[in-house]
Length: 166
Image (cartoon, helix red, strand yellow):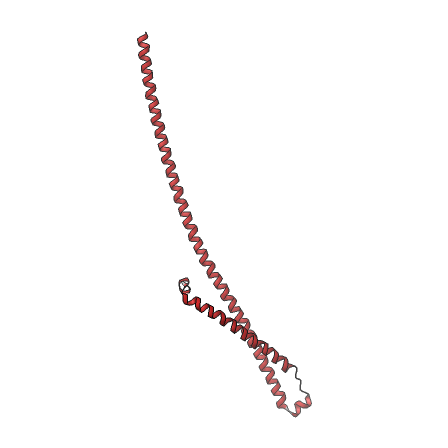
């Protein structure tokens, strides 16, 4: 049933489009991930002196906020990238499985057809062998009867000659 749905020509055109979109999304997620890594390194390297932190607490809070946001973005983009790749692999495996099942079903029907044809030909061969044997037996019977008749005639002929001579 699904094969009929996915054999529509529209799906093949959309598949090309979605493959391009997939690559675009992968590139975007990689860029976001690399940007998040850069931001985490940037704000992790900044250390505010205690004197400066006491003087300007807003600066320390601002740096901690930026670090938190960059770490959050790192985790989100990394996890999104990982899940997107897992999703792509799952779709690929499902596609291969569907193609394998379709080819398996086609091969199974082909094997069943070949088996039925072989059984039919074997039955026909047996029937022909029996018919040939019956013809051979009937010919043998006919030839045996013919030779019996000839021998009987010959015996009678020889008896007649014997009686003539005696």
